[in-house]
Image (cartoon, rainbow, N blue to C red; front, side, top):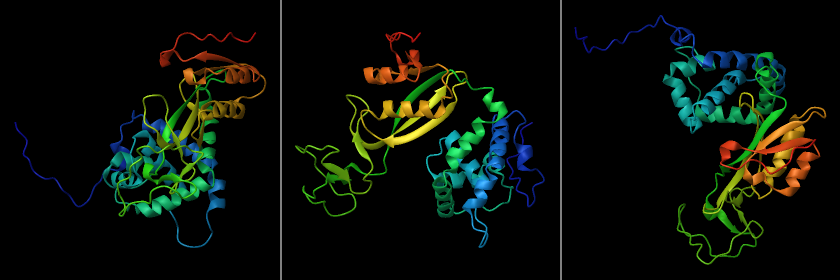
Length: 297
């Protein structure tokens, strides 16, 4: 029998967000791990916030919301706040009740900046990785490293000569800008809106962009990120960051292996790895041939 197409709006709901989430949902163990890490960080939160004034967004809820933004690739905090208003799964994970009011996006951003300034994100990652249930998943011998472009929030039109020369900007916020015949480099030019951003391209055939470089160190047993870093973009930044990530994570003199793609195939980098000590290898997934680097005996 065909069911009627009737609205079933009601004034009250007797089902909680907890009951709406399936028992086998993959976010359940993630939330348990996150909650344990956040409990460890509670003293750090106390030092970041004043004892007086109006209560702000709970840092635990804010960090859980940022995890959702990363897990589900929500492209802006404005969209994240919008989804928190109607997505019951998001409400449950963050710790909001069915009828809890959602924060203003500006307030959310200001509170997020406070946590980032206090290095809470890095401490949160360490607290997660040191949990017994997570440590069992990690390898302490075999790692991979890679870098990725992170495009800056600066227009290429803002990349102007440092000495103030060049054609003046046109009228309006989105005026035309011609770069024909103009030689630009990071030595002579800089962005007027984000001076730390550098003009860079990942490989031949790709356009140059104002960007930064993100670097991750992953263990190879479960493919989990164990360390990360953000640097200015340069031709040597990936290799320099890789060595720094290894030094910050490797304990003792135990030998490790490090997988990397062809961008890391530089003599100085291989010699630096051997001094750590570490054995380098190509990533098979990068479409490279087996490594020509002999292992260290």
